[in-house]
Image (cartoon, rainbow, N blue to C red; front, side):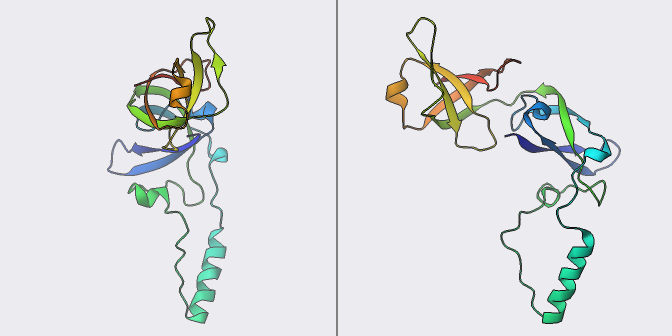
Length: 175
């Protein structure tokens, strides 16, 4: 959940651009599916491709010489292909940061309670626990429950209620 892409629709054209947002300070409490406003980081901070273009061409020449073309099935599909987006700059991928959340898309999330990270609530009647969602795109969610022992080891549904500025995780409740 700390690393994601925001697909930006061009204002004057049909072009879609994938902008990488990396790190909790840049994600700024946004969750998968939220509509957000972003700011592009300076081009010096953009992500350089892992393999230089010249290395790719050399690798293709070697494959042509051997007459073997072996597809790389484990290579991840570039986000631009998945989202039908284009790259702004062939030498680097744009990076940005979320500067505002326009519309929340909170829904119900399924997960299990972590075995550590529990806190007793002030009056001692409930436990504050951390839910680890099944969907890796969703951050951990802190819930308060009196049924901690009954819920342990089970898949449960939770809903997010808020995400305070000073909290590492969103706050939610068991459904």
